[in-house]
Length: 261
Image 1 (spheres, rainbow, N blue to C red):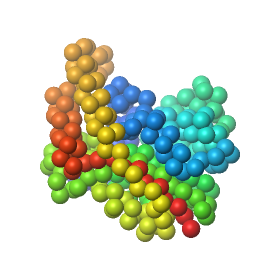
Image 2 (spheres, rainbow, N blue to C red):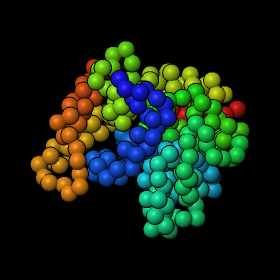
Image 3 (cartoon, rainbow, N blue to C red):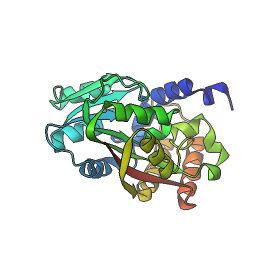
Image 4 (cartoon, rainbow, N blue to C red):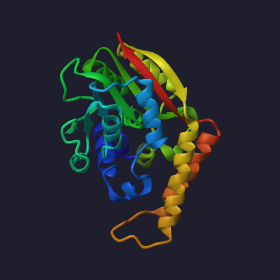
């Protein structure tokens, strides 16, 4: 494995660049995480979000989660992402949300916000990608107000059963290489002073997303997409390995809510 595949800063930079690419947009669609916006709604309900609350969306990507939380739950949302936020800002302006929804460049391990700023923090399908999960959890806790809640939906994995091919940088981009068991995520949150109040499996969401990605890859493989360069056979191989990991019970998807004292 190369230095690029093991260096935390290189991993973060590569992931940020990849998730900004047109190929990823084509393959993943509007929502970049298993369960899509339906699971985002479930997370918001589990957090008991109310109009007027201020929410931080960590690894906000193109802004789908932030827009939903503002439009359907009446919250003010700050999205933070390591990659470019231009597309998300454009989307907020197009939806008339440039006031209640704001996007910032920033690292989850060094959040650019003051202590006790937010009523809630959400992080969907990204905690598994953070090289230093303990520090990220501590940052979530730091920016939360007392009594505030953090909600995570993420890939879970038994690392001892992971296909070696998915330990590469491509595995990181597939949200698998450093995914951990749900209990380990809960331990990181507890170590940051966040008491886990809900732990809910959603493995079927990961299976459905893998199926959707495979179907789109096969469709794109049959047509000529200008400006798109992708090794379809290799990508399809990763979807097969990921799907098998879910079937074997080695991989899954989980929702966690934790509260700050």
